[in-house]
Length: 548
Ligand code: ADP
Image (cartoon, rainbow, N blue to C red):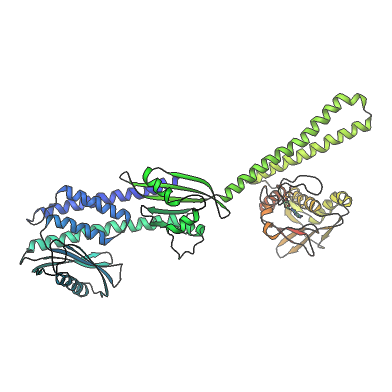
């Protein structure tokens, strides 16, 4: 939301500065126009024009609309029969817009005459070819029985940036426009063109900056006016709607996207009427969760458009759910060994007098086992917190990996035998020592081997190996267990990620989903990589690559 406040402030400062420029230029114009007996513009006219120009500016960079405004002002202040203009539809286009404002009734030939004159003028003076003309006539009306003719005429060039056209003012009276008036009109058009060019130059630059910013946003952003016209729609929104970048966004598409949950049109019109921001959270659409915020854009306290922000919160929601599950599970994991310790020690205190040594020993063993589990869990949580905050510290020294693997295999030999698993090592002969934190790498191997033992059924095989590849050393732990589906191969290294969501594992322990995340943190702190592949013919093969 802060961003939007910044955007609006960013837009409004140059905008008001420009309005001030326009007011200043028009006041200067008024001074020079005041000298002629034909034209006078009082401040209220200027104020009305500025308000209208700024409104047009806010909506679009539209020369046609600006000229309409100018002619409106002229109609009130100069006497003439018709004011017409011919301007290109877009820069460098051969399609033109012709518009005539008729003050009196004229015949069709009068309008046609203006078109011909303007076309000829534009082609000769602006060196452009006029191919198609969209014609529009306002006022009048056209009256076929009228015999009014254009007996006086002033033609004035219009040049705003690359838009080149002309304006023509005609009168049914002979010698109606003095030379002074013609000069003043030229000056007026020139100054207005200059103003527009300045205004539009800044507006274009601002728009470019604004567009680049909106386009780079991860959230869907769009702006809609009261007629549900989309003034802005960024690429992220098109992505969310499943549109190609070349396709345009319209109200039908957006409405059908939201149709299961809300009426988009009703929501927009409510914000137009109430003038207040509306936020709709937890919209579940096509397997994703969104938040839609509709913010009114006010110009002089009137809502002229609404900006909509569509945030994809699927990841946040997933993470939140995972966090919730994780907290519940950790509480359970902490509570169960603690209850064993508490219960057993209570029992020992009360009943030790009636117990023989071997019974006492059994209870003591239970306490030891539970506190070891507890300590391991707390250590895991601390390690994970250290990795997350980037505070993992390595104490590297030259390490013989063959020796490390041998001692790990020996350590797990008993558990493997109990599950009738063939646990063996396969280390390349002559493997050179590597500079690593041996305790941390041992912790990685512990995680990988204990996982392999957890997820491999009785009678399987686990191999712990190491070999040189180029300027790296690879350690691997392969098993013949249940394997890991392709879609989970990356995710299992994320914190809290447990593929079977807290289900009991084969040796009766609940998993925490921290082991691989910690291993990844340790390996990356060594500037190495860890990943999992399928093992042949079955199972998984975890690979740790370390710089040699
Ligand atoms: P934990 O084992 O405590 O759940 P880990 O981060 O060590 O946490 O593992 C994350 C998940 O990766 C496990 O829940 C399991 O689904 C999967 N996994 C890890 N090692 C193996 C393996 N050798 N075979 C099959 N799945 C495995």
